[in-house]
Image (cartoon, rainbow over all chains, first blue to last red; front, top):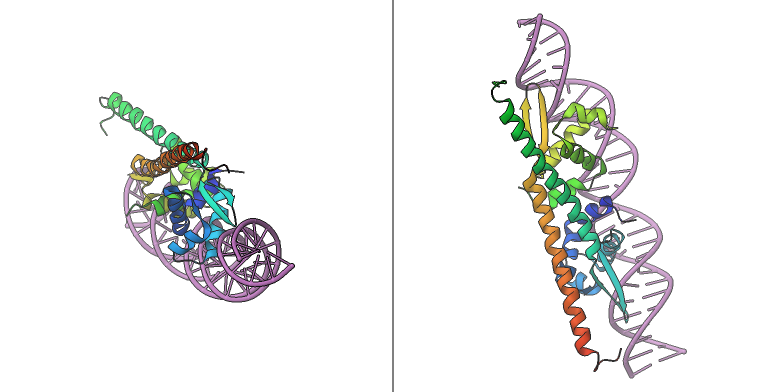
Length: 109
Length: 109
DNA sequence: ACGAACGGTAAGTTACTGCTTACTTAAACG
DNA sequence: CGTTTAAGTAAGCAGTAACTTACCGTTCGT
């Protein structure tokens, strides 16, 4: 199942985020990623597994290679989560400011 | 410093995300959070420290209490990161589809 | 059919993270 | 002032996470 948990945990690791960003630049194979990064190929494989289970990437068999690309749905899900709480916090600021305004004559603070 | 690293890592822990969400609902004190969650008060304190260093929350002294609220800037930063890669992946899909279209006569596949 | 290329999996090690209890600090208030 | 209330800090422990090397399975080319 794709959850906020798996999504944010996937992006919490710096190496894995680099993998994610390279794939976002253009679809990439496992070996190509491993060549660009300072970790072994199995490490990249493990990171890709985590990213895939988080719903952040897709993979396609392409001969003996396996090409990974970004899954926009998972990315959008996390973005929308953050956007929700961003908007909510702005709304809270607004009402808090209004209450302070209304109370300013009664409550000298 | 506020980074993607600290931000995503902060939201990767389920308890910490609950803390974040409660604060987003309305500014809350440490003790109040601890009363609502299945962890000790020091644990909540430690989570709040991580969230604050990640730039996701602010705190204000309020007598002996300390009230935490959401920091919209940090939340927006993470949202914008995800939005960028979301848009980028959609653009990639589009160009990939166009290339497939152009090649359809030459490359039977 | 065989070898090479590519990639996933297993097992083990090291480092970090989240929790607890115990202690310290700071503000309010009689 | 001393006590109470609230919260941050320290130390220690258990679980997890990110690597490594070694191994196994598939697909392509000759």
